[in-house]
Image 1 (cartoon, helix red, strand yellow):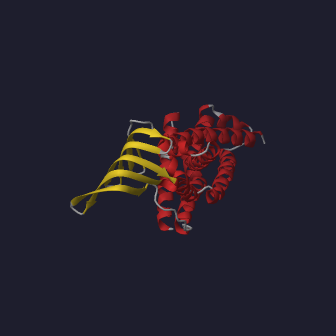
Image 2 (cartoon, helix red, strand yellow; image 1 turned 90 degrees about the vertical axis):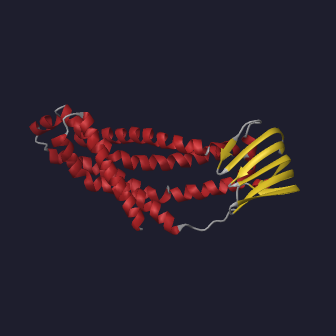
Image 3 (tube, rainbow, N blue to C red; image 1 turned 180 degrees about the vertical axis):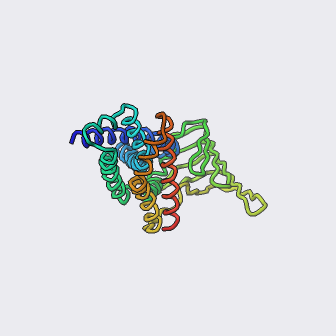
Amino acid sequence: MVLTSYVFSHFARTVALLSLFLGLFVLAGQFFSTLYLLFALPPLLAAGYLFMLFSYTFLVAMGLSLPLAVANLVYTFKEKRAFHVLYTFGVSEKKVLKVLWAAVLLLSLAGAAASYAVNYQKISHLTKYLKFKFGEKVLLTVPERSFATFDGLTVYFEDRRGNRFQNILLQVGGDLAVARGARLLPYGLLELQNGHLFARQGDYWLLSEGRVYTLNLVGRYSYEPPQKKFLKETAFSAALFLSSAASLPLLFYAVLRRAESRFKALLWGAFFTLLQFVLAVFLKALV
């Protein structure tokens, strides 16, 4: 009972710390890519959106952390000669393996089940909807006299008063537009006044001039349940967890027999993490 409590608590604590570190690291990259959207959202909605992003990254990070946590725990037992102490009480290494496998299996089943609810496709479609819903506010987060780029849109303007802009320059995709004035409308529509539009047609550039142009900055929103993509993402996350439980005996004895230092033990953990990631990608491609 003491062994089970120690293994479960030590293992769960290590997984939580590793998952938090890896999750925050991955989230940092996503945070900077969606920073403009977070500023455009109401505070509560931005906090909820950020929480969803972190939930997904934490879940994936937890799946990747399991082999590292196993390797760290096994080497800790080995370094402190805990196996020798356990032998004197009639507890073999196989008993430790069974307890550790139970801990891994518990987290693996929980993570695999959560993969259905915390799915990247849900976040992707939510992101698309929020960009559509609050896309007209994106330009309001850009400082005057500075260039800003987000989702294929580059913008610069000299002055802004509310939703009106003076001397504005935009690049949307491959097209370039300049105008003396502009007015931001709901749903990401930007009305240009007294402007010029440079558009590429094949190998040629076309210049058109007009009093009023209307550009759609965020595109149209449509929702179709991405069942196949949803299943692919679920299979990917579930495979990360379940492969950890399946490969545990190999990792356990690899660290126990081959790791002479904690660094080598963690290298074994990283190797098994890579293997389970490759397997998860392979199964995702098969679905």
